[in-house]
Amino acid sequence: MQTAQQESISALTRKGACLAFFNAYDDLDTARMIGLAAPNATVHFLPLGNDGRGSFWEFGKAVWDLLIDCFPDISNTVDSLTAKDDRVMANVTIEGTQAKDFMGVVSKGHRFTCDHIFVFRFNEVDQIQQLTIDWNHAEFVNQLGG
Image 1 (cartoon, one colour):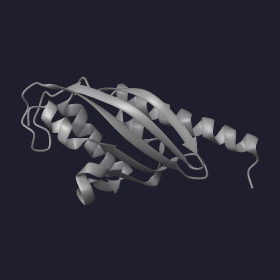
Image 2 (cartoon, rainbow, N blue to C red; image 1 turned 90 degrees about the vertical axis):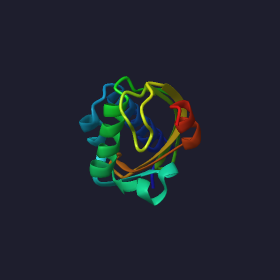
Image 3 (tube, helix red, strand yellow; image 1 turned 90 degrees about the horizontal axis):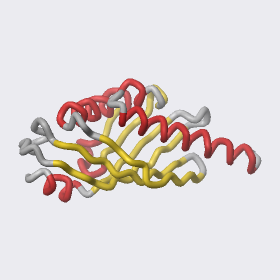
Image 4 (cartoon, one colour; image 1 turned 45 degrees about the vertical axis):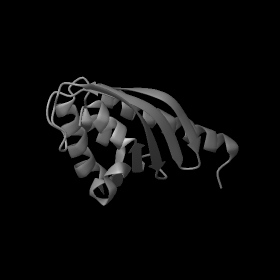
């Protein structure tokens, strides 16, 4: 059983991993993003339903690479991080300008600003084991003119 001090250190380590993930995202570096996860980690982009589920290292990287390609100025601001047990919830604002068609949304060069909730779940060695991401997809598409 972990002591309160060990739990506090794990919470700080896990929050640090989340910040490293978002720093890598801001740097458009998907290799660094996925390198923070366990090899068998999963990701689920909730608004996409079952089509938004897959391997963190393959599916997640492909989605983030596509986002970066279609929104080359994509950036994020971490508004809050809350740690509890093996999870960290991050409230994040993501924004960017569409430069290419993205998942059926034709590019009109519009900019989006969208609040996201990332829920990271960590394994016993503080690697990301599971990530779920939620956002208002209808509002996202509307901002892009879709």
